[in-house]
Length: 267
Image (cartoon, rainbow, N blue to C red; front, side):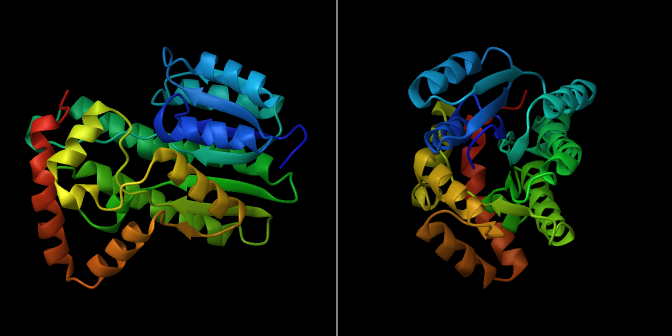
């Protein structure tokens, strides 16, 4: 991917999304960075233009506002030739369902499920204008099992998995390749770091730097792989857990996750 085509990356201001922006710019790709206002995304875009000589545009918006999202994506798609979509934006957390506000539950569904689906649907006709184009959807290892004390989050990531694989089959032969990525634990900030540490050894299994996850995911997607599980330990863990009965898997994972509650964000 070179020339005047663009990659659209959601949740690009920090964490994995920021790493995707850097990795894409390093490859000479022009980038469109979607993020909430106030996340220093404008500064990131400026740095990418200076460092790599690509065009980098920051678009700040609240992706849970469906009307704003649809309007913005339609406008952007008419202005920039988008060849690659990275649906990275997402939110989660750990808490008892009764200690989680309905506003937070709705936010998880709106961002993880609705915004991903809407952006993808709007951009598919634009992606199909290219001989080869790509969609990368970020799911999670959490998609492989229900998890108590997370409840809505793994369900939302299971949706992303099912949606991505179904879409890949539907778009077969169009030139649009759909890949779904299942990252393990990521220490993106102090809150997630405390959660991972609270789980002990189980929490740190499969832990990879965000730069490594981004590199693996990007290479796999451009290689047109359908599913990508970054890291040997995550692959092994997925294989071993798949051998257990579902009820056992649910209890084992939920028991470990329960240790995170003291670090949860419930508002």
